[in-house]
Each structure stands twice: as C-alpha cells, then as structure tokens.
Length: 114
Picture 1 (cartoon, rainbow, N blue to C red):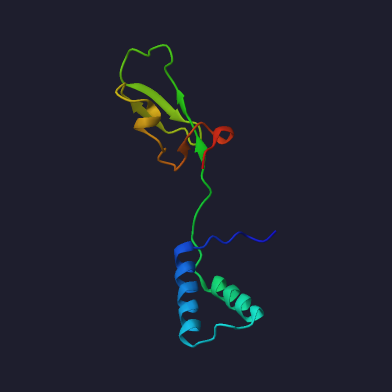
Picture 2 (picture 1 turned 135 degrees about the horizontal axis):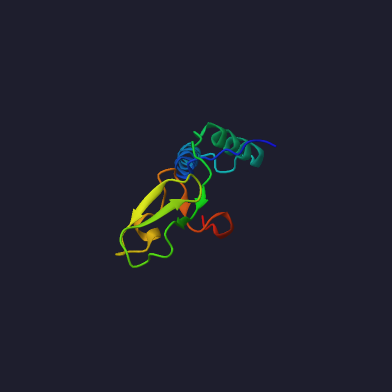
C-alpha cells in the first residue's frame, strides 16, 4: 500500500489559481481536457507534503477514586502513564485536554473524535 501524502490545501488552491490566471491571461480558454488534467496532476505533485502524525487518543485514569473530596486528585495518562494533579475547579479533561505525550484525552480509540 502506498503511503498517504498529506498536502496543504491552501497551497494547492493558490497553485491552481495561479495556473488558471496564467491560462486566462494567455487567452487559452479552450485548452484540451487532457492537458488540463495533466497540469493539475503536476501541480499536486509539486505541492509540499505536511509532516503530521496520526492523532493518539487516551483518557485520564483516576488513581484515587475513593478520595473525590480531597484536592488535588491524581490522574495518569492511559497512553504513557504520566501523572497529573487535578484541582476540582474544572474536570480533568478541561484542565488537561492533551497529555504531554501528545494523546488527545477524548476517551480512547473507541471514543475518538478527530
């Protein structure tokens, strides 16, 4: 399977617009469809790819479930095990929507919302 290439859609739009403007400026309104498609494919190949990682999903694991009335509470990341202290002013996910490892704290893979 071929590796996915993620591109910057804004850069693609700008390149296509510049190409369109050049064609219109030259008066070539009735260019061949094959040439147009080839031109678009060439432009897509020239657009730089984005260096991104898939989103990791996790959740905070309550490490002191019997002491809810005491602050701070201690939670650990389900992905890396890093501990955070949580004060009761917000939910732990509101206070820490992401772990330091980069995991999005939205409930884990089965509850993922990208």
